[in-house]
Amino acid sequence: MRCSVEGCDVENEEVAITTIPPGLEAFCPYHATGQHRPGRDLLLRPPCACGKGAAGFESLVGGYSARHTERSCFERTITASPDDVTAPEASPGTDPGSDQRHIVPAQKCACGRKLDGTMGAYPGFTESHSVRECIEQTTK
Ligand SMILES: [Zn+2]
Ligand SMILES: [Zn+2]
Ligand SMILES: [Zn+2]
Image (cartoon, rainbow, N blue to C red; front, side):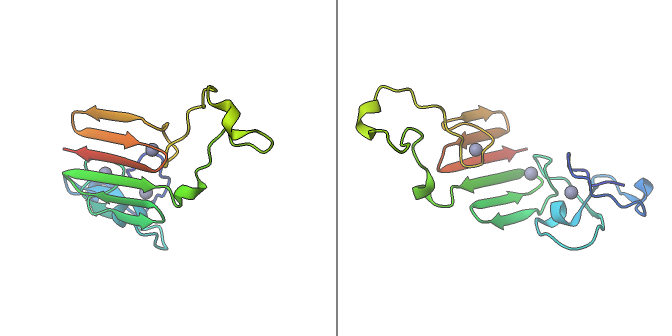
C-alpha cells in the first residue's frame, strides 16, 4: 500500500487495501499531517479537496503555508525577502537607465511553478502568482 498522493513513493507493504474503510485513503505521515515524521507508517485519512494531501494537512515552512481540509485547500508562497528579487536587466556593467525599452523576460513567481502575473479562476479553483506572493485555493 502506497501513499495516495501522486508522486509520493512512501509505501508500507504491511497495510492491506482491504482494511481501508470507504471514504478514507492511505497517506504517509507527511501527507497526512504536514509534519515530517520518522517512520513509514501509513495513516488513514479522508483526502483533501485538491488531492495533494489528507484533510487536516497543515504546513508552515519558511514562506510557504498550506492548509488542506475536505472542503477547501489553501496554499500560499511568499518570497522570503522581497529585496532578493533582482531585476533581470540589472547586470554588472550595464547602465540601468539606458535599457528602458528592452523587453524584460517573464520572471518566475514566488512558488516557481508559474510566471509572474499568472491568474486563474476556474470552478472550484483560483490562483494568483506574482514574484512576491502566490495563492492557490481549491474549494469543493
Ligand atoms: Zn505521501
Ligand atoms: Zn488539498
Ligand atoms: Zn506561483
